[in-house]
Image 1 (tube, helix red, strand yellow):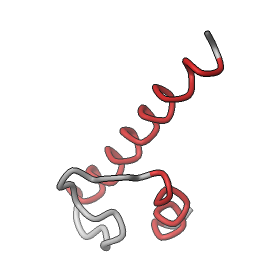
Image 2 (cartoon, one colour):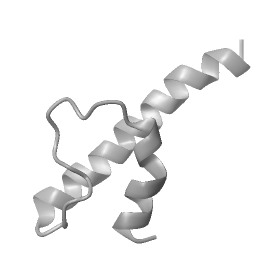
Image 3 (cartoon, rainbow, N blue to C red):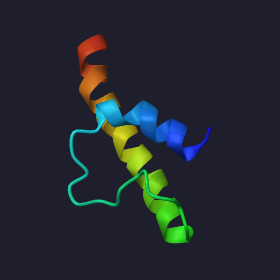
Length: 57
C-alpha cells in the first residue's frame, strides 16, 4: 500500500499525534520511515487495548 492510502485509512482513528511527525509528509529518510512505522504500531496497540476487553471478557 502507498503511504497516502495508509494515512487516509488510519486518519479517522487518530485523535492526536501528541507532537509527533505528520504522517502525510513525504518519507525522505530512514528516521521518517521509522517514525511512520512506529505511529502504525502505536495505533495498532491502542486499537487492541480499546477493543479486546470489550469483546474478550
